[in-house]
Image 1 (cartoon, rainbow, N blue to C red):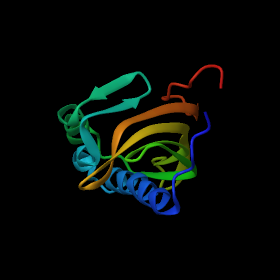
Image 2: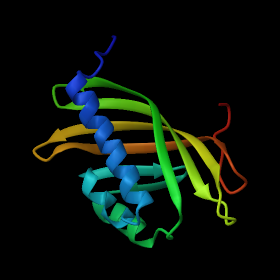
Image 3: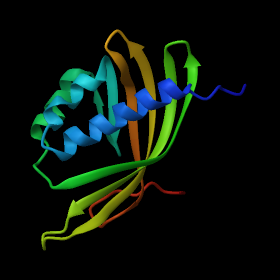
Image 4: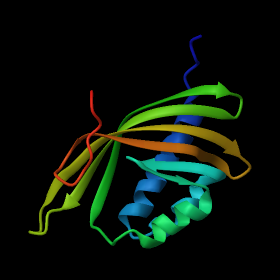
Amino acid sequence: MTRQPASATDHFALTQLLTETAWRIDHGRADTVWELFTEDGEMRLGKAALRGRDAIRTWGAERPALRTRHVHTNTRFTHTGDDTAEGVCVLTVYMDDGTGGTTPFAITEETGRYVRTEDGWRFAARITDVLFGGPNTQVRQGS
């Protein structure tokens, strides 16, 4: 069964959700990322799986203050129901290299499940798989 692409309005709103997440992380507000998830939402970063808003809140509060910039490209969203969607995008993470410059730290593929709530679209799941990365990243095999 072929899923229908998200409408232009929903595509824009879902892209805004990705952008808001990146902005919060890049501007020292990772401790508020939990607000963008459903109550039982899941965030997976490689092998680390965080389930529920409390776990995501703890991750954000404990995240080191790194100078990063997250850039989402190649976003694709499809509807799975009236108020649900799935999506995929490429995320490139740039990190301060310690010399005043930046270097690409990792290129990942993010897949997500989304739910429309009374507060707008929220993540039900956000899964990040590293495609290419630096020495401190875990690269997904077979990609």
